[in-house]
Length: 81
Image (cartoon, rainbow, N blue to C red; front, side, top):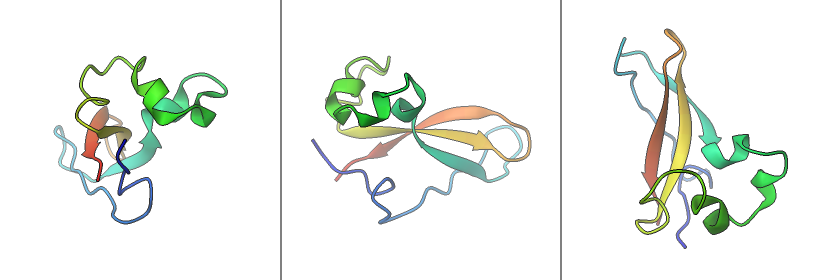
């Protein structure tokens, strides 16, 4: 299990929207938005059921991003260290 540099405050995401090129807002790990207590479960356990086939194997942290201008929501996979 790696460590996400974004979740741990070592870096920030600066991703532009594919529709309008505005800065997207990072709302953190997608697993934190599932069930009520999922944010408290082990990260590797939630990666097994989040619907992303490669994030556990390739040590990636899926982040929920939303465009501040047009509202397009995306998931960006951050490489863990």
